[in-house]
Length: 263
Image 1 (spheres, rainbow, N blue to C red):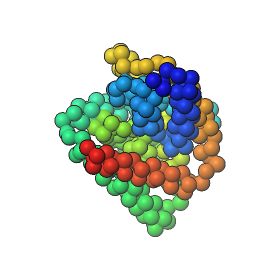
Image 2 (cartoon, helix red, strand yellow; image 1 turned 90 degrees about the vertical axis):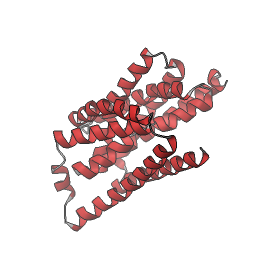
Image 3 (cartoon, rainbow, N blue to C red; image 1 turned 120 degrees about the horizontal axis):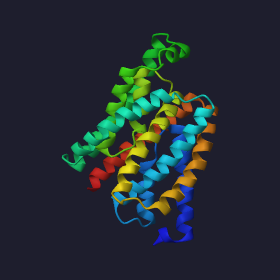
Image 4 (tube, rainbow, N blue to C red; image 1 turned 135 degrees about the vertical axis):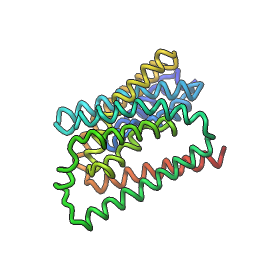
């Protein structure tokens, strides 16, 4: 089994490095990438792969968030708010997900992603048409409990329902509802993922689903990658980050559609 060889562990570390970098730039946990990598490396079940991936997700998100906090770029109150409310509804979403067919879930999620891409572009065009400056948008994007609660509850529900990381949902919702620029939304999302991943990891550890060696190997790569990604983010133009995030959403939508057709 590849997982038990030095080459397999080295590949996992490199994959953790890649996903950690993406986490720092796009504010995602990276579980959708880590789970297939673990299955390819020889993890027997999807449940074990999902549980083990949370180690990498948690360590990379923690690494990146510490860097953002030290740089004074993390709105930690908003991150905690998103995480706290998201953890509540994630359990409800997971319960609902077991009662809906995979085909309906996959197509529903793909549709949601494509609608999100459209709304992100529409929001930007409306702001430009109304003459809203970037400074005005940031001024409106302080800590707002009710909108943050709504985003967290929605992100948690969709995350549990569709089996995806909350970052894919939290970033665009912050932009649409709070008027955040994409870099601020990415950092807040990454901070929220720390608590969300920790919650899931505790549950799976208690159930005996976590494989610690491959998870820690992924995590080491993720820690390094997140440091690189969070340092690279300020240097990237907002437009470039937005394009990368939309490419991610499109790729996920295509993946979900292909999975449905294959099923």
